[in-house]
Image (cartoon, rainbow, N blue to C red):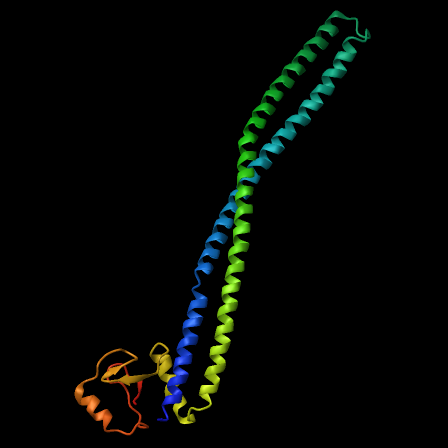
Length: 238
């Protein structure tokens, strides 16, 4: 066995670990969770707008109710005075009657306005109820997807821990002088620094080397440093 074989085993473990990390970062549930969160935020924004509108209507209704209560009290007091017998002057009696009639008309107008506000409030309340139901459903969906994501992440993490432990065992067999070039090539070549030469094909780039180059390599010792002429990776030969 050449001195490169243990490093090739390390590469296999590193590639496996890279694949697991990529898988963890790109789990479908992660995108699904982000989508549910985005929908929930949109519902929350709509709820804020609906609550603001409902608040305006509530304040308007309260203002009308307060004014109606105040005017009703005034009308009651005027009628009490009118029918108490304390006022006998015809002009004063007429003035009181006119005042009561005016107040009652105003109360009627305000009650009509209050009815309009109540009618306007109905669709707002219905929309809020619908949004709340949607928000509850999205919250439950978020919890379900998050639980599934956590489970998938835990499974990958467990597998990754095993791969890294096996990688450490293999790394202990690698001659120290090989690490510098291996690390440099991994950084330059997408994570794959070393590959096996099968026949005339580099398993790193899957391109066939020229016959002359293959013949040259075969004449070298298996411990010699050889690079693929196509991709620059280290080559391990049988």
